[in-house]
Amino acid sequence: MKNIMTYLKFSGLIVLIVVLFAFTSKRNKERQINEVLIEFVEEQDPYVNEAMVNKLLIQNQERVTNVGKEILVLNTVEQELDSHKMIEHSDVYLTVNGELRALIKQRTPIARVNAVTPFYVDITGSTMPLSSSHSAHVPLVHNVSEREVTEVFPLLKKIQKDKFLKKHVVGVYRNNKGHYELELRVYSFKVVIGEVEDLGSKVKNFKAFYQKALRDKSLDKYKKVSLQFSNQVVCTIK
Image (cartoon, rainbow, N blue to C red; front, top):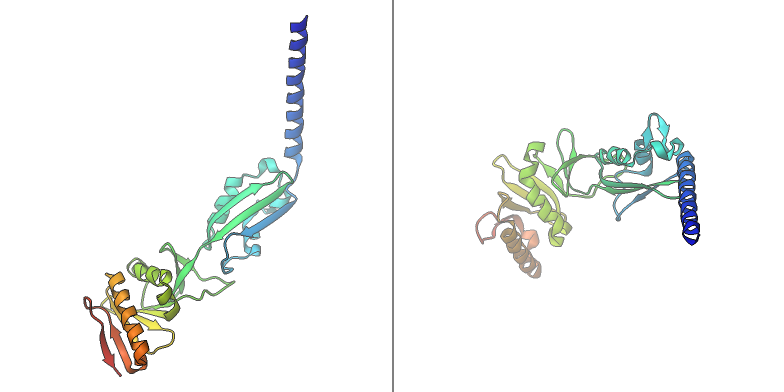
């Protein structure tokens, strides 16, 4: 008798769980997404805004707030967001309260190329279009096409990561020989890098020259400072 009662209790518990699960599933499927919340991770300039993201959250000409949870495929939403040329990565999920949350990480431009159709180069070395929402304060690159981005990228990355260069360099110019020059924010002399190689040594030599010339108050005397020769800084006076 005791075994029968235990069996009946166990069976009743299973039935109750199945009923509750079916009820919860039905309620969850019928529930509409009542709000879309967009959050931009990290502190970045607004190259893409909430209005742009909302446009990407449209499916079959309906706003996602009118789409039932059961037919909203989160992976599809993420793929739609990630396809935007200003977005590096997105993470989309639903809350138990029916909120659709989208976490957006934007791409990070490190230089702007002054081509026929201007474009940015991002932190990974890929090209990205200009933004209608914000103009990045990054060095301007001249006489470089898309096919030469791979060549100049190590120099752009060095400028972006080095605090000294990032503070002082506002322009990069490529001549017909494939040699590069830097334009400085304050001083008028050009810094000749030459080919994009041995950048660590070249930058180290330039910093040593700069500090000495700053102490001597002679930085305004120079027209050109060349770093392209091994372990040398060759200066041209105005």
